[in-house]
Image (tube, rainbow, N blue to C red; front, side, top):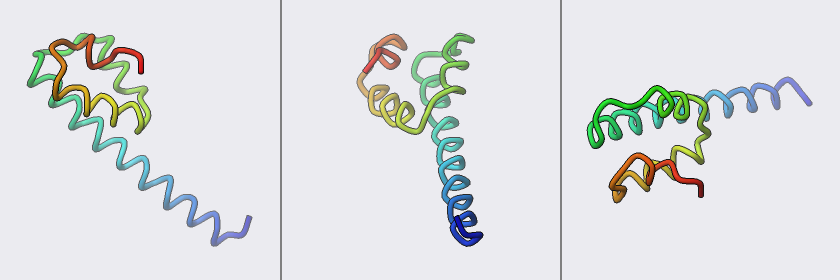
Length: 74
């Protein structure tokens, strides 16, 4: 891998990390607003999530009636 390719990869990784951090903040904020203070287990789950997890949860929280519905297995 050339140095240029490495820089491109680092830039992509940086963008992905920034996207994940932003999604984490928004999902956590919306969950708190909808369901009240979040249990420690939910906060830990969110902290360990992938972008794909966040996308799924963001979609589900619109219609979910409980935290369990948001975090059910896919």
